[in-house]
Image (cartoon, rainbow, N blue to C red):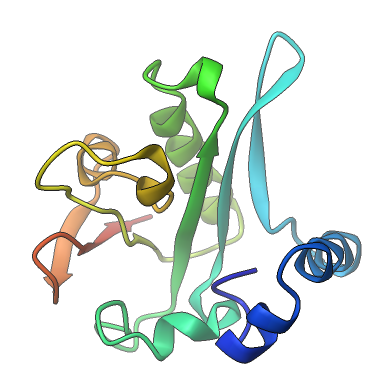
Length: 155
């Protein structure tokens, strides 16, 4: 919900409030707010994606504000269960997101990964790694921060 809500609302709903908001979003949405990865019938990972317009916090970000007015979809969040990290699940989720966005007739898919200067705690790479996006065919289209490129792929 971080990208979908103004900061004041997100802070007010921190914890159970935001969890309830996610549940409402999932139940009410015409499209799922993301995709799940399963390993041996157990949930192992998640990727959040939607049209950029559904993430108003991006527009207000100095670093991640829109590069142009192209109708892009955005990948805003990954989660990989600890037991499945380092096995390529992030790349598999990103490739599934490409296919899903293409099926929805999206023209572009954009991501906001990090390119850490040193080893980062997993919690700080929740938007993905630049190397993963590059492996999936994304190209850097802007960089307003040394460690935060904006990457995009034509679908």
